[in-house]
Image (tube, rainbow, N blue to C red; front, side, top):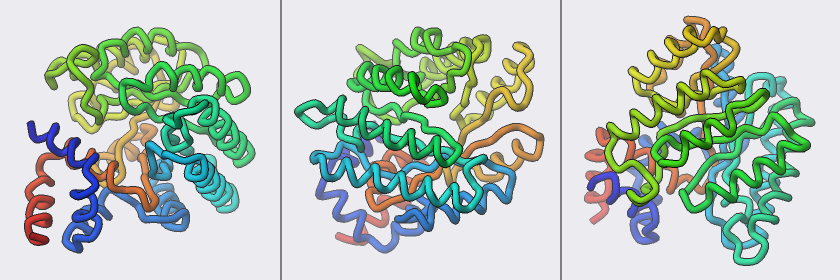
Length: 309
């Protein structure tokens, strides 16, 4: 119920206005979002690299409603990729891209527009010496996103995929993508799909995650395991050992501001760790989804809203 309410708040313009102007929420926002521009994103990348951690930079924005905004997202990614190359950070950094920020939902030729914009970002990433991972969004976009992924991989084979364990279809998608050279990030999922397409109970999602992880670890691709759950972290190590995977043949991924001590502990053990670092002006939707995943922050958030009343 609480998670559903928070995800509904992510779509409310009124709640958004209150949160964006509430000074008490800013420290919590800074915990999960690196800043509002490329300068802040690059600073976070430098800091994390100094701690032995890799990064995936995400310029926040989704569900754009104009071709102009979609083009602006491309420019933002090209800017940060240029910065990564100039500062010698590209060997430890990639970018994550939401196709809905590139025009996927536009009413005419949305998927085609998003694909062409994604091609430009992939080309900039290749020139910088790194790669792109396509974020997965609402369940209604999965087929479109996988079509775009397949098209991009023709010219940019390192383009990564994201699959959500909460969806009933994902184990099959893992089998399709667990092949040589395929980079796949497995996460639980931060959206609220209907029970007809998703597992409704957390315990079912956990079991799905474990099954999907087993498929990816047994395959010939490169698993990117996006979980903060201590049990999933342990299972990742166990499955890697069982399948003869060395420390460079998979990676852990965690969110900026979430369990930072665990990120450093895993890196100190010699494991590959990548932190998902969001930045940009359009932070609201991402921020509320993080709250939905971490109920301990909800009381602080609620007090901040009430103080505005």
